Image (cartoon, rainbow, N blue to C red; front, side, top):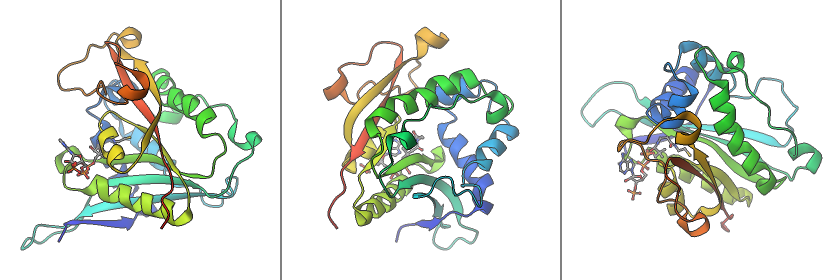
Length: 249
Ligand SMILES: CC(C)(COP(=O)(O)OP(=O)(O)OC[C@H]1O[C@@H](n2cnc3c(N)ncnc32)[C@H](O)[C@@H]1OP(=O)(O)O)[C@@H](O)C(=O)NCCC(=O)NCCS
């Protein structure tokens, strides 16, 4: 029996979910640019404060946020609590949105909004860049958008990421919705296995913009989405906008 169990996350899980997020993305170049001195407690708190929709916020009618946590049970014969090792955040747009609703300016973030030690410049360049690329492609389509998928490095390869992805894809299928996401270099092969198709790439000039040179340890996505975008230029990191059609259930 798998030791991984998926359950719906609750606001009390937020500190554990923030630890998973920054543990998973921490070693990557983009996270290091966005948190140049390391991720501070303030940055974790600011992330946590926006993870769940604010109670009473009905400004996003027809939009549902689903956050699932993957818990790892202790080894057979061992005692102890289950530990959250991975989570996924999905945003379900149940209905089509009008151009007035979807074609809104991508909000520039400030360090105050992101938390002490964060680089708003790097955040707006990377996350803002992804949103700007995705917006005119997704438009107002009703869809299940995978906003976050993260697993702590020491628990990767145990099936938590796939179990979370399966949960979201099954929900999308049951609702008859396609699914969209922006794939990181590490996430890309997992998404391909679940039937996500390449739509567009966003090649970020990491070395040219920030003067950082790739090391062996960093995956910058050089082998991803070659069919639609060709080889990745030297010094760039590739994110891939992907779409999975709804499968009849
Ligand atoms: C992408 C990610 C969520 C996958 O989570 P996971 O719990 O390791 O996923 P799984 O255990 O289900 O493994 C999925 C596949 O990746 C492979 N894999 C996972 N971790 C691996 C590792 N460290 N080295 C090699 N392969 C690995 C698995 O073998 C599996 O392939 P298979 O289905 O052929 O067996 C995780 O690697 C991660 O958090 N990465 C950093 C953050 C990130 O980039 N998130 C995606 C954002 S779009």
